[in-house]
Amino acid sequence: MTARAADRARYDRATAQLDAPVAIVDLDAFDANADDLVRRAGGKPIRVASKSVRCRALLERVLAREGFAGIMSFTLAESLWLARSGFDDVLLAYPSADRAGYAELAADPKLAAAVTVMVDDPAQLDLIDAARAGGGEVVRVCLELDTALKLLGGRVRIGARRSPLHSPAQVAEVARAVARRPGFQLVGIMAYEGHVAGVGDAVAGRPLRSRAVRLMQAAARRELAERRAAVVRAVREVVPDLEFVNGGGTGSVQHTAAEDAVTEIAAGSGLYVPRLFDNYTSFKGRPAALFALPVVRRPGVGVVTVLGGGYPASGAPGADRLPVPYLPEGLRYDPQEGAGEVQTPLLGPVADDLLIGDKVWFRHAKAGELCERFDTLHLVEGDAVTATVPTYRGEGHTFL
Picture 1 (tube, helix red, strand yellow):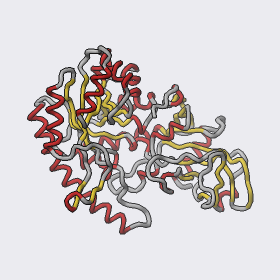
Picture 2: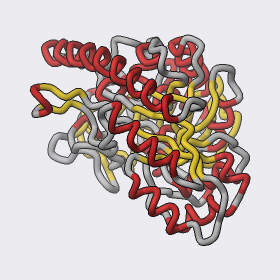
Picture 3: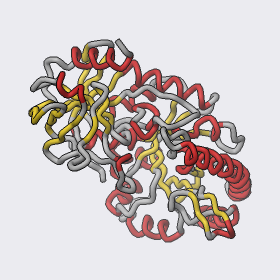
Picture 4: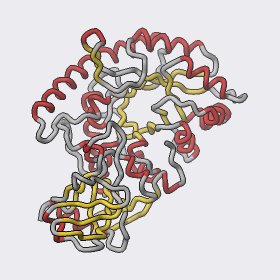
């Protein structure tokens, strides 16, 4: 029996009394992935990206482990909810226009001490001030650095379009704007190199593309390490007691951690290891988050139909954004139908071994987005479900 076949047998036994669709997290794999992230971080603390987890119980579990400290959130409403729930170090990774949220933040000493908001433009400070509604608490601020690699005088850009702050001078200028502004405290810098941390460099069947990605990423790491260090020096001239410099992501943990200027690493997807993280030379994680759909039809030889399945991930549309049939091995989508809203046909000789009611296990393309489809996660240890916990959705929250 292969390792994957053994996993399928365990998951089927663990969920034998549960009707599909159902989602699980294999805690042995989850914990092993957490250990690997800590190993690669080389002693620097890891801030957990909540959008990649979206389950309070699992955020608590990983933050209880040595090597993890703090949360990186994705909306202001989520940040406030987490802070009210007892998480005392929440960095909002994206600027917000949530006026009601800012009013709540500025009026509550506990929330203001726990939450740090993201800024890359003085106009965002104006919005926060206009939203205070009389709240006088100091708002903690982090500046985001654009990490994109710019070539040919800026005519070629590689990297996500996030912050407009690219040079040390630009970041320092906004740092001065924050420092001069009453009611704000600049405490950190963040820089997420998604073109390094979030792009696989060993795509199966694409050797030339994989080599090109590795060359690009090596150049990007060198350029960013030098520029990030210069940015930190420039900002520390304005704010000498800067608390943190955050960088990285699951795919670049060890590279970013090697930079002296970086004080903490961000990671989250590496806990669940969705399918987009299969194509890396820098690490090999264990799939920890899966969902199962039930076989409801057998339309013909070599075909079964499962209920549901149309759970695409965000990003540029493409086949790589679809969940992948994982267990049993050997199933594939019908190219004429793909993953359906209500039903999904799956092809392959192994389909003939599946019976009505059997489970087919899938891996989502991205990490936390799976939790937007399920209210609960069943936590598996060995071949048993040992706990069932709510996702954000199960607690009544869909923040975006």
